[in-house]
Length: 360
Image 1 (cartoon, one colour):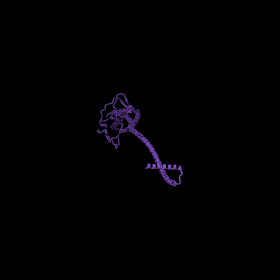
Image 2 (cartoon, one colour; image 1 turned 45 degrees about the vertical axis):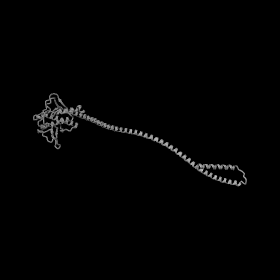
Image 3 (tube, helix red, strand yellow; image 1 turned 90 degrees about the horizontal axis):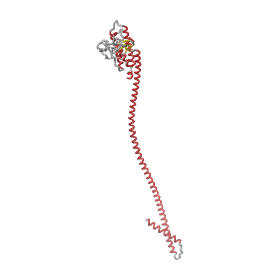
Image 4 (cartoon, one colour; image 1 turned 180 degrees about the horizontal axis):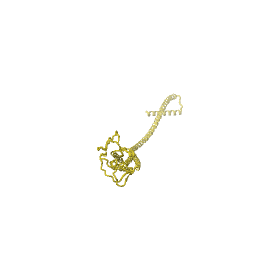
């Protein structure tokens, strides 16, 4: 269809060119030929008009075609631009995809590194927790050790202070040995019916006579008290027992030991208390393990013989020796026996003043 129109357009253009060439070649005609010529001209004019109309139509078509072509070119240009933009977008997307892939790989690597670091941190946290517990335990042990060392130092200072105070007691009431065979045993069993229960057959002590401030304790006033007994000997025994009672009371207070048999000091007229519920020194079935009762007033026994029963006085000396044995047991020293008041007192003073006492 388009080829036919193009061929017709070319024919019209050729006719127009011929008409123009005819106008340029004006010819003179005869009158007789005028009608024919006029008819021919009229037909030519009609043809020319028709050609002009076709030309105009062709021009319009050509304009429309040109416009369509221009629009097509514009569309093609727009499509080209869109294609270029699309290619550019594709390139950008490809670059972004590459960057995203690289970023993803980097993120995975960082995630792996972070996971490794987290695991390391967890392990380190566990190790730190264990180390903290060990440190706390070490601090606790160190604190306990320091406290123990401090306690030991305080105990050493306390024992040193006790040792010093008891050394002053030893200076106030020195217990000395007179060299030579003793004239008498210090104290013998005063009666088979005494509170001791089972009077042991103690052998005489012949290592010398013990004295306290120059006064000794003898058995004679406690067993053979009579009208003819030397009053001075009785007084010296009472005074010596008063010295011993005072020394024992001071040592017990310095060692902070409550005496099982409390003392009521009065010099040569001192007493010792027994908290037993009932006391009957004359009874043969009296036991050393008599139950104590706080509701019964303690019985007092004199540490002197003047105007007193010898049995009660001997029992008082026995209880005084028990107090000394209590102090010896407190410092971990064995008693020398139930009949050696001064010997036990001397052993007590010697043990407290020894270097082993501070180190125990």
